[in-house]
Length: 131
Image (cartoon, rainbow, N blue to C red):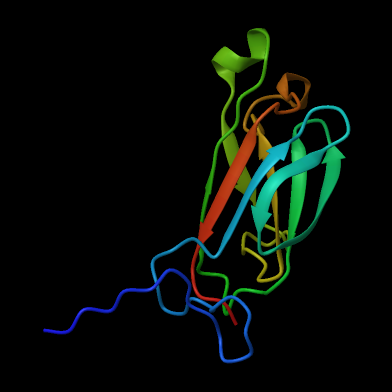
């Protein structure tokens, strides 16, 4: 059996190697969703949009190959809202299907809109195949 040891693997062009058909997250973000939203750290995110209280859109740098990807979201918020909070994603096209180029996320949307709150910490990771 051979052993391959490497500190860095690069693409033939010299940049980061692209993962394909792997179980690694193909998109992740750590968003400060309170006040003026800001990404703390991200991968495969070209931009974020604040759609209102506790409601965010993440646009992807590289689109997914189809809308069967798996988003995993969470959130924390301060105050009394934190005990009742939950994070979820919305369909991006309004027809129940996820979009391949972005995802709209929010918190506590199954409750009344008045219950929504901005997330101090809003993490998201997506597993699937890139186009």
